[in-house]
Amino acid sequence: MDGDVRRPARVLIVDDSEDSREVLRVRFDATGYETTCACDGAEALRLVAESPPDVIVLDVMMPRIDGHEVARRLKADRSLPFIPIIMQTALDEVERKVEGLTAGADDYVTKPVEFVELEARVRAMLRIKALQDALQRRESELESANARLSELAVSDPLTGLDNRRRLDERFREMFEHAVRLREPLAVAMFDLDRFKQANDDFGHRAGDEMLRQIGSVLRTSMREIDRVGRYGGEEFLVLLPGTPLDAAVTFAERARLRVAAHRFSFEGRDFQATISCGVAAWPDPRLLNRDELLQAADDALYVAKRTGRDRVVRYASAEFTANVRNFHDQHGSGAPAGGGFAIGPR
Image (tube, rainbow, N blue to C red; front, side, top):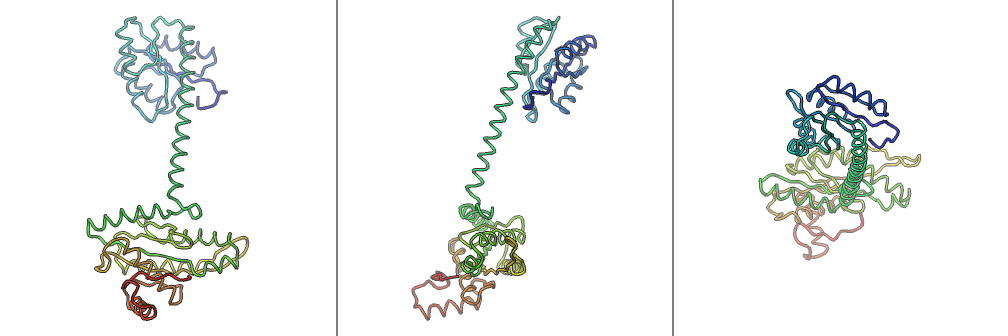
């Protein structure tokens, strides 16, 4: 009864005989039930769809849609809650009772109906319904809890964005799709500039709020098919399926400008922040797999940090190549050409 023990149980009486309906209605009303009546199967189906009762007393022998068909349709409707059906018939034959129970009836009474017996069966069915409803509520709560746990397992608790595990799964799926269909796939790696200094100046709680708000800015800057997540620390990764390098750089620059223009607020204090970004895209003859694609974006991010911050650098651009050459000149040829920088402070 929807968890409300104070509400009287609602009984739907379905019978093509007006006299039979009225007799049962008066008796149920006098016993404290809330009754509704239907004169045929079609009206019964409509009333149940509008407001499911707690129990149905259903006549078998009715024109057009008989009680067996009404029971079959109601039990097949997955949108309805569990509704006990008590069938009543003038035929006291085992075969007909079996047919009714097979159609979906939960109990059976034979006409002429002894109301004391019928009301006792209604009470029994309501007890079963209460147990069934409680079970369904617990199952629903368990499903919700499991869904929440599943979501927490792949979500960053601070920003609510995808975590690294989910991003890695999405990245693998997107890269396999891109290779299969020969479609472009771009990745943009963002990093909050001077985050340690921000934590020192404003406190770690303010730093957390900066990360949350930057995540929100990035999320509102991208398309529905794109994915953004916190990749670690103050680093965010955006996956851009079907996006060539030029378009990815345009997106990254737009996101960078939005962060720079955003005024962060925390406990009455306002402050600003900037982000740096490295962008890479597949297909590229220098990038043979998704690990190399991700490394290329991270290397481009390193160049953005190394050359002033608050900027976007694309992989394999003239600026990128010049910094790679300069890095090799200073540190020798130990790093692979075009990637694998030793990341310094950001």
